[in-house]
Structure formats: C-alpha cells, structure tokens
Length: 463
Figure 1 (cartoon, helix red, strand yellow):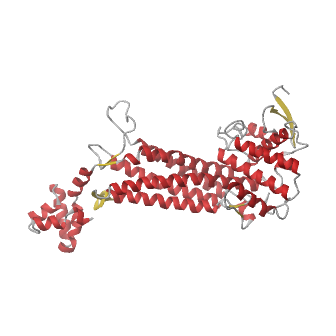
Figure 2 (cartoon, helix red, strand yellow; figure 1 turned 60 degrees about the vertical axis):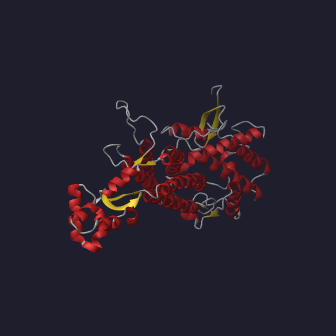
C-alpha cells in the first residue's frame, strides 16, 4: 500500500483505493474492468440516484429498520453530495456508462460515496464499513435492479421537462414567422414539383404544428415514467423490505422530487420491461425526424442565391468556404440534421437494448439511460441556439416567391371546373413551353378576357 491509497475489502478480496476518494473498492474494480468510452454518468442521473438513496434512508429510519445515527449521517451525506456535484464531488463518480449489466457498478459507486462521507460525518475513517456499510446500510431495502431504473426514470423526467420548455419556445418562434409570412403567396411543391399555391406562412405554421405534436408526444411518454419500480428489489418480490416500505419510499421520493410518483402496477413487469423508456426514446426519434425534415426544408428554400429556390434567406452566421469568397452556408440547419441523425441512432441502440431483457430483468438499462439522456442533452443544448441564430433571423424573398408563382403552370387547376382536365393540361403545357403566365395564355387563346383572367387568377383569391 502507498501513502496515497487505502486498503479496502469486499467479497472478492482486498484492493488499493485512492486515499482521497470517497468511492471504494467496488468502484475501483469497475474502473479497472470498464475503461471503455470515457463517458461518465450525467449530473441529472447522479442527482436522481442520490435522491433515491436519501428517500430510502428516510423511509428505513421511519420504519425502524435503520438506526437514527447511521440514517441521519446518510441523509446528511446525500445532501452534501447533491449540493457539491459540480464541485468537490464531481470526480467521485468515475464509472463508465458502459459497465456491468443492470448498473451494479454505478449503484455501488453511489453507495460507497455516501457511506464514506457519512462515516466522516460521524468522525470515522473512510472504509470503516464494519460500522456503516455501502451494502448493509446505504443500500438497505434496495437492489440495483429496482434503483437503477428508478433513477433512470427520474433523470429522464428532469431532463424532459427542460426539453419541453425549449420546444415551446422554438414553436413560438416558428409561429411568429408563420404570422410574419402569412400574406406572402408562393408555389406549393409536391414531389419537389410545382403544385397549388400556399403562403410562406402556411409552411411555417405547419412546422409549428409538427413541433407541438412532437412535444405533446414527449410529454405523454414522460408522464408514463412517473410509475416507478422502486421497492421491487432484486426480482420484483420486494424481498428484504418492510411490508410498508414500497408505499412509503415512493411517497418520500415524490416529496423530494416534487413529482407525483406512483408505485408500479406490476413490480415484476417493472423490472423485466424497459418499454416505457423505449417509448420515450421513440418520442425523441419522432421529434428528431420532424426536425430533420424541417431543417432540410429550410435548406431547400434557402438554396441559391442565384441557382436555387431562394425563397427565404437564412442568417449568414459564418463564412461558408475556405476558398470561395462570399459563400455562406445553412450551417445551423446542417448541424440540426446531424443532431437529429444522432438521436435516431441513439434510439436504435435503445430499441435493441429494450428487447434484450431476459426473464426477471433487463440488464441493458445503463445503455438505454445514457442514450436517452444524451439525446435530450443534444436537443436541449442546441435548439435554443438554432432558434436564436437561425429561425428568428429568417427573411422572406417575397418578390422571388411571387415571380415563381405567376409562372406556375399548375394554376390551371383552378380552371378545370370551367375548361375540363384535358384542356387545362394542354394550357399548362403551353405555359411551360412559352414560360409565360397562365392568364396570358388564356387571353391569347381567347378563352377569357384580360379582366376575367386577372380576376379568376388573382393570387389572393386563389389562397
């Protein structure tokens, strides 16, 4: 043993642990076993797990199965760690997100940090587990199998609430553009070909509706996560818990998190299945697909400025080329695309992990949780920037929109009740061949007077 380490013992034997670490031997084994990605648990997940431990300690004290001395020390340690996650405790959770199945390594990481800090609070040395044990006291009435998915649900809810707020703001920004562009007529496009007219505001209003629908789906799936598996312990039976533990610990956790949690309707299903987390991930995928679609529309409508559609102008936020002077690219929309692709990929990993559960437990929950939290983080971090540096600065090229529309041969659709489909199609072909407006062809053919054509094909009337 060196001066900078201490010796700890577990069921496998002894091992050196850094002397200044609050984590212990089982965390140290995980560090050695899983040096995989370098990615660690996100702060919201650590916070959620510690809240679970605090609720358990309060409950066990109230039920009289944990003495007040140890229980109060664990609660105090939990409070200290919660307030110091961005400070002195930020490096005390080193377990890689790719770790032992079910998350046992991380559960023990949390148990050891709280145990060792509680020991210090009681004036004892770190590692004095004969007095206060990570397993026997901090983990009392619990298993990794019910605490890890419980913390996962809580962390996702915390993160989802921030994302829902972000989506509300982004939707408002698109709706503001919908109102601003509500009087700008343009050609609609189906199959990327000219179609019946719409307004630019109609397009942006549809983007608003799509985002609100996706946000609503996320909120529905978020609410499903309020049903927690806590109290089921290892296999759903609630082994080694007081008969009143499950109800009481859920109540304590609800108070701590200010959320209306409820116990699982079937504790066995709650440990076997990760369907609710998978469904939430699916809602993130739905949002990502809409964001990709919207970003690609913006890129198409912005394309140009001389050889593309160029009906809108996205803000120029940085030079677009290292060799072509004056070039500006739709970089904010491009970045949103890449984020969307990552979210879809994360959901694929979640889907595979969700179906990989076997018998009484899904041991793949760590990768499910980390992928969902990554997706939420990417979206929550970037969407406000996309709103500020892209959406809010979009300008309409009204002259270009109207010029395209006036040459759109599909305006003959409005004449089919009067002329019939085949005659209207013949006029459309002539419009396309001669590159002149529909109403000019009608007047040239003597089918309508100029006044009649102007009135019948007045853009505002067509909309």
